[in-house]
Image (cartoon, rainbow, N blue to C red):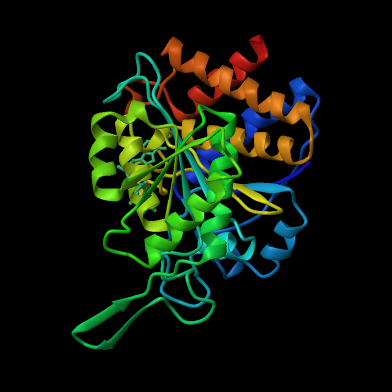
Length: 353
Ligand code: ATP
């Protein structure tokens, strides 16, 4: 399989290499052949090639099965046309409509709650995000100095696609799906999203569908996250709730993610590029490594490649072992290890299997 390596910015240069290292060892152990293709992106691409997303990037990615995208530090990019934020472009161009973000607690790790094992499936290309909810222009504008209008886009097709992805996931897990919305206020927008979820429920009789208003859900998530299995929601609600959920199980370093579309998938952790800790070899590589694991699993299932699914499972087991041993963990997990030592420990655990 052909997988791209796009380091991104800041801690991306530290956690993406650890992820590739782990995926390669798991692939070798299971007989999966991966052709890796490094592709420049972000600040480094701007400095060397004059663009944060150099010409030809989309074509190169099209030829791949999937890729790893490290976190993007676009907030400090120069404000010029040659320095766009790449990830909304990638999500839109490849129709990566489902952002799948698991949140899991591990025994003995610093965590507000134990027994948490949920997945938030977030619509990825519509909603309030003004840089991707229109094909031209921007979904946010200021008609006068004192008035700003933000447009929220909800479509039946977009809602239905992400709802189906969530039902499909729920049927492989504890068969419980919660749709999170605010149709009491956004009667048309959230109303349409919920309608599409309800329509699909008939096709998945084994999955129990519950509905929750976003504000109540935010409270319940903090108090009793154990009650949830798969959650599906619109873009902005999902963006906020996934960070909240990550905070329940040890922080952003524990929040992996996959952006999945009809043809391609992109491993992308929930967290940003963490410039405050970049270059110190202390970033937690868990989220990125587990995002890579999700990519292998997605590719394996899509191509009927049991070895790739097995490689993903092995990574998960190896990571669990490393977390349980607590010897090489990064400071955010209460350890005194480094990004590299944690990656090395996962590799060692894989080799020991
Ligand atoms: P964005 O808006 O781009 O998602 P953000 O504003 O959420 O970014 P992050 O870059 O994710 O910000 O960082 C938020 C905090 O979480 C920072 O203190 C950062 O150091 C910490 N953090 C993020 N990722 C990791 C990680 N992998 N390991 C350890 N700490 C992390």
